[in-house]
Image (cartoon, rainbow, N blue to C red; front, side, top):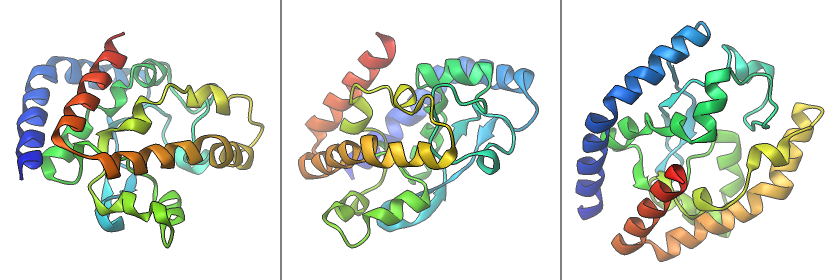
Length: 200
């Protein structure tokens, strides 16, 4: 309950404080390309329950039909304003609304698309889905440029293979580490490190 009240307080406070920037980013997205401001992709929540995530749209319309869920740094689907938002993780800010709704927490394993979430089932890493997904965790703080690693992939299939072989194993390990070590102190530490990473 303490975690939930903290989630509510800080997410509502965050929306209020950041509202001028949220409105600015929304306007820039509409100017940059036709389509909605938000991307509402389906993600797996606690106990694999599907929910629709809030993210600023950083790609052209119909991006999922053009390519897969992983995104390389040179992905042509990403808009100009989208590249800026992705660089500083600003496209994730609307997930504060998911936190307010109780679908996510400020700190927890990043929510996966359903096809990737299925890879956790029946394995030790299934514990990742015993708690709510979050906006940040150890895996989010992992100092890796995912887009750079995927850069240059010649096809959607190659992009997915590189992600599954070179990125996912360490990401899952760090997600499991958070679940085993989760505490109020750990959450505060991760929140402060996340803010530091974005600002610096």
